[in-house]
Image (cartoon, rainbow, N blue to C red; front, side, top):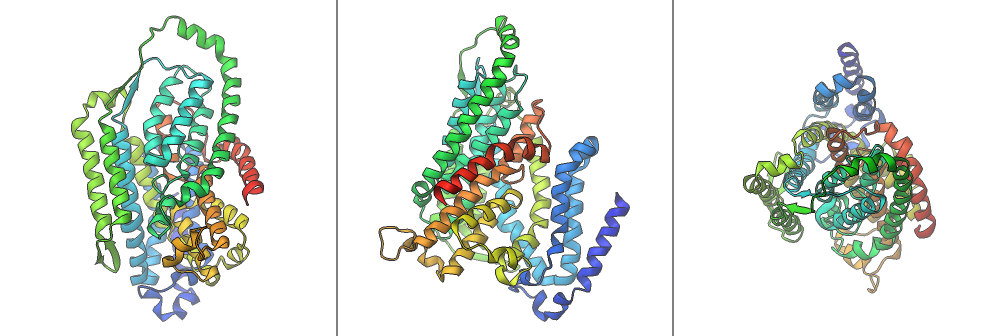
Length: 487
């Protein structure tokens, strides 16, 4: 493996050094260059490599992967970063610092805080995972997701769901539908729900615009997926009923109880800090060319503080009762560190639009239905937040709009309303949020839920197994119906 890695590195380094595009542009090493117009498509090989590693290594070499997934992530990151820095120097350093300072670090801070705080909320008592109970829990999580974020809702609800179904023989489908609904579709109604919508909020999309604009899409998607889940879970439950009846016979019934509710105050603090960073503009400082806004830095510091308060005031015994451990967040942090590094060329090429190597793909994106499927498909494999922002800017460019004009363009009652842009943004918003459920890496909570479920003994499918057995057969028909109804 080491030999093959060295050979791959030398091949990529060789071609990047000799890249005529890189040497033809003397400004390629200057900060501000449209680097996406220079990078060839094959620079996303390390990104494809890390995705394939996540998909195949747990199947082919599970013990190696369990012990060395962090090293594999680092390998692909270095494989891209070293030649990238060698060829593009200052611009490459800027791009890497930008994605880590602006995207990755706040991303991990938010995930860590929500994971830590929600881990202190414990639901105890006899809760049996019947189809009705499971459907109600998934419905509650779906509703909660738009107000505390998909990550917060997923972390609060996943352990009670797993605990309620501890005696079920078939429970993989429960976790997969949990990912569909709570970790993705449920976050479609506010900028707090999912990172792509929060980026839209930061770029002048009114806070409650998405609530009324995407509500019909979300109700149809969630309603259909929840109905399918109920019938599927009923099928499995009836097959197991005799086994479950025997389990119930000798079990003591314990009243339901929720402990650690004061952690809701810390969750409210996190939500408040996110809102603050969107409304308060306090200026910025520059770190090696990257503009760091004061309100965002304050937000991140205070979010960490909320997590530390939760650790300080929540007895560790509650976390033990919740089967809390740091493994899921560590795994997400290590893997997404590599993903965020290797995603740089993919996002840059997309942002270059007609000047980039994917110009042919973007040229055919000119109808809402195209925006829905292309932004959604890319969000399934790329981080859905920058993908949303890329297509958001692409729509503005097509219509000759500026960010300052966005509120007026989205106000259907105003003379400045732009129905075409409204249609584009509905499609982009729905695609980025809904289709993040198509893979484990489409949205950060997906991978975290998978890791928590596996730690609890649930046999989760592989990367491709999840797609083939669950997301493609159950989600794609729903998205096709949404296309015909709305786009």
